[in-house]
Length: 434
Image 1 (tube, rainbow, N blue to C red):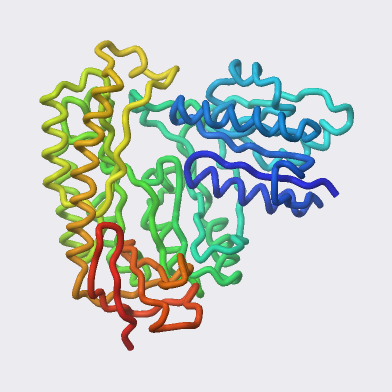
Image 2 (cartoon, rainbow, N blue to C red; image 1 turned 135 degrees about the vertical axis):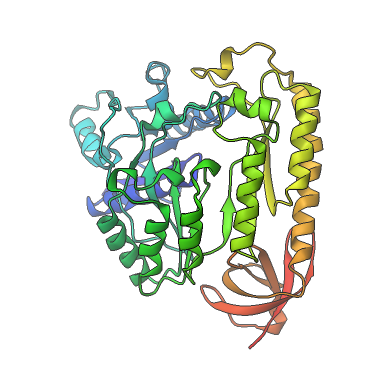
């Protein structure tokens, strides 16, 4: 029986697809390996959002082949799909596939084993491609399951390569989602996180929207919580918010990707909203969900971002009271519009702006956590991070710790109400209440 090791880079969608592939490979009598050093086959599921991410992935492939020269390396995912010609130059990879039809990888491996001749099989995307219905119901050692329900993107933000790596928008059929979530619940997982490349576009081809997918999950016996992945702000309507608010199991955490608080920069990015429209959406969410958490991503150093543009972005971010902010530097990405824009920002300026914005982010998170003190909220405990605390998350994704000495048995995969008594810059502490 051949042993397989899986190495995944990038987003939750990639991790979900790796879990699906593990299930498929297991059914085909491939065995999991605990290390790439002892594996017969290593499957590298790649990401290509940034050039630095490409470098880490390519370095990992070289290291695997150097330390285990006899293994078969399968390079799959977004990098080969977006850059097929560059992928052909990776001589350490025995098999190269893209993001389409990952479920065919076992067949491709068996074909390679016939004569061990290099295989490159990257299928192009077309306008009316159907959703690849990979599903997974087994998430060992997890208390939450990320479930991919949408793929592809039609937006073509000027800095982003993903539409070229994932094709156009398409969605998982509702009946398949229902069956998959039922299987997840049967395996004892209480929380579902709906994920996608551009999640807010879910269901357009079925005349549905994201709230309909949430409803399917909320109506599944055994599922206690339903959470959303990253969202595009312009797609969230009042009618969807109204419907989401009607579901007791819905977790009011909204990760709304902002990217910049400056309208001039947003337009250059080809984002489809203004800062005022974003702020109005956040206000509507907070009115509909009094105890909620709005988190975001912020990019600094986009081409031609002036000092004044950055100042406007920083001031807007400071005003929004985000619960958490992922701050990152703009990274040039070959094949995108932004890569060819004039007035590229120096790395030193990007670094300076990152430190300023990250300081705002840390203060915002600290203030958010302080606002939770005094509340009593349900916490789904996930794991004991250390010997002193039990750790878990509230519905709005507030990270909570309670002293282990107050409750010595494991609380993993259990939900208890916790009174928040204190906060730090990273988490809240509390006490279980009846």
